[in-house]
Length: 397
Image (cartoon, rainbow, N blue to C red; front, side, top):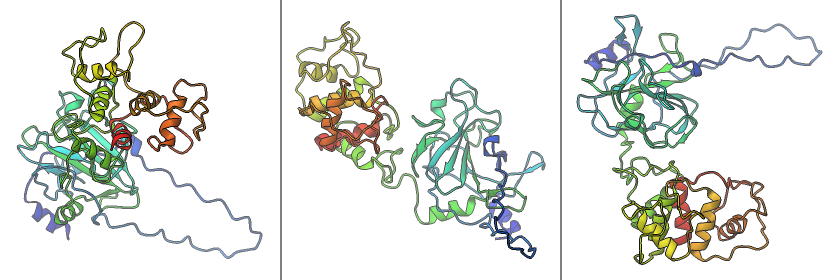
């Protein structure tokens, strides 16, 4: 499609800004291959022409990133900044689009995120996420939340720099932060491919053809999903759905599960008590830091009365403290009544034989409940909600 035809198709002028990718996305200098060690004389030759990259308007296999009705005209060639720059992106939004869920169009790793750890959101991009996709391209999601709002209004729970996200996973919420207009909240969506050169000499791709193709084939983020942040391709999808179907949890909010958020001791108590089907506790007065109106007082009391969970010597339980993987092993092995191994035979190099949790880890490993990652168990790493779903399904499913 010609540039003129795309402009006619757009038929709508939108308020947005074409942003240059952040410094972290700077193009890497080419490194020459080592010279040949051959001593034979060779005729001088012209260097081969580099293989052409895909067209800048080629269709990329991606999931439509916005869950909800939005307008997304083709404004790749539209002028911005009073004609000083070109948009080179697609805006997806509408007057009532604020807060719509934003999902990862392609899986990958978060390599750029603004407004966390006490820093303000970017002046023009606002709250924004950059993801290095598994397909080698970079995807930028810009103008999430609102400039004067909290990060939790812009980002999904657990989203942070370095986090791995799955295709279709909830990552944030559409907004108007940065220099976007509150009258037309939108997602400014960019695709960067170092192999591509667009008509303006940059490595941007026009997202519009790919978005049209995604909608045409029904590749939408809400398609048949229980939780917005748990796509069917998620590694623990089956366990999370089992957990919900079993009535053990309804998630952490409206249609979200928060799979990458750490589980605390209070939450784990409730999960375990429901998995075991324990009877009502005789009393809720077991620990000085767990009042009767605490959201997990019932589950904590149930575990305490059945000898599964114990508090500290000072009479506290620390319900908000994150549970580590080795602590989880001890709690699960006790709850299941597994015989802890007296002679620990494990493939994990990071589990000390003398550890108080080593026997429980061995019991879970030999019952195929906790398998670790190669020769590592990561005993002191906090357990995520997704991991806990898998452990509970293998234990009680």
